[in-house]
Length: 259
Image (cartoon, rainbow, N blue to C red; front, side, top):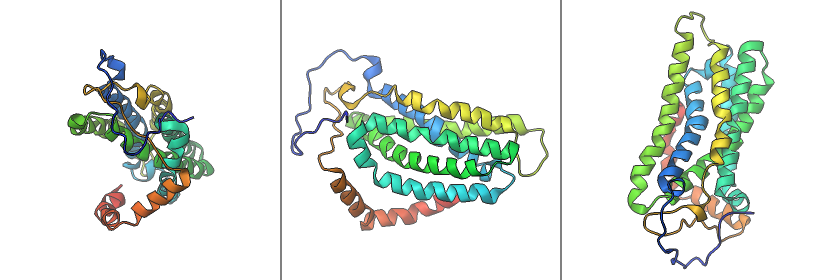
């Protein structure tokens, strides 16, 4: 069942009596958990792709995998609101961190033994998980903090993603500084990345449910979804077709190409 409590759309009386804040219920704690998930999942994934096709000997294979990842990401993100209704925002975050390690495992087997099928399978897992992850991550980052602290905690959370890319790059450099073979990195890089990315779902389990978060303003986090999944899907479709959203695609296109 979902952990989201449905309320009438017009109900704004979500303030609760003040109670002593527990550090593991604060928005800062939850932003830290979210940041660690971002570090383990998209952060390290970005570090691997910054190698150039994941450091593979056959870049066309990983490029095909990346294309599959981004296509499936769009589809899974489309259905995330319905998924959240049934498993909750915490469950969605857990699901969203599961698919990154199989992709790294595919790159490892391809790097060391020449296995190709797991790269494609891992890319599919990564795409499905990533779409759910991005949607859930944004909802948590915006919905959990108090309005006055959203900007500060958003910057704090995003720093973990960049830290993942920086640390991943440092690992690559440290393990491959003395290598002079073109198109391939040490398989040890993938083992480290797989281990770190496998921690993502377990870290996500430490996230508080919205009803458990204790804000300083005394208000409860409200991430309620009032409509049925089909209505949510139609509402998401209408959002995708809005002029403002289509303009965002044009502005973000160069960044996607560079990635």
